[in-house]
Image (cartoon, rainbow, N blue to C red):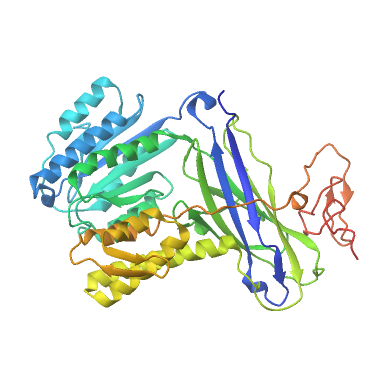
Length: 488
């Protein structure tokens, strides 16, 4: 039996906040999970558009096997496209040129014939010129702008880093952001991990590099198949604030780290909406929300609502989950909570892991063996605490791990230095935390708009509410339906 497609929303938080320390903010962790949202459940897959970007700069010809591997990988990517997908292949050098279709800046529709013609053109790629990633992205943006597809994706391969018109890359990343997702891949020895992270991070993709040319084909195919599996393309996250509450930040913390605060769109004076890039049928993403509030005139030890979080699936075939409240209970005192929540601790460790991996990368680049040893030890210790198997596996290729708990390692006499770049990229990929819901009594009661409204319990609040409402959406005061509402 096919499972009913669903989107689940979970909000987890420690609700106590000291009145003397409001600047600490209310920290909330949000999990959004899709289940069973496959093409059959939606009446068919969303329309997709794909651009395959192949670095053809002069260095790709040395050795010749590098370009040959890129050609095989691009051919595998073409084969992985779903029938009906609009696609193009871009040849990247010091400028961007169409490889397929050959004489027109447009997209073709994937079928047996167009795939064969695209692979024939890929077989004629040759290496020359420099590397101008900004121009490659500009052509990609122009191509995907011609499409009305719901899922727009690109995969970019390079063996170097942007050396031509660096300002153009900055400009293009800003213009491309939110328009399509781009995975960035490195091959050879000249790729720059920080640049791959930058491109993928701004464009909601993933960054990686292959150490063996023979692995590139599978890497490209995996990127395309992941894009083709995206089904839910219009899911949005909304945070609605009660009076006097501010939104300090919203960050995605899993699967990759990304600050979303500047992406928020104010739909009215209190609600901020965040669009998300397309989702797979079964996927989990986690977010860290921080709100600010003024405890002035608040009643101590009474639970109040600061905001509520909503998710809209964007599909009439996938029901939206019920909204979840963000609560606060003001307590006496001026200090921070005596103990960090497990979720805060988990993602704080992730931030430390990202910094440790970066320190290891920088130490290697600087030729500082002592600093490299220290940073790798810290990376191992944190990765072990988090259960980050990919990071541990990468470090094990650089150093012998003697005690992961204590972070004791010994650098191998010989290792591939490119692994430090891969480690840096893995440091930006997080392990999911266990986000558990609050106890049921603290959840908002369902609101029936047909019920007769009653005034808010707070005398000077003008709001009227359905009976049984837990918290006032205007002032946040607990109502008769909330725990502790009757306490004096």
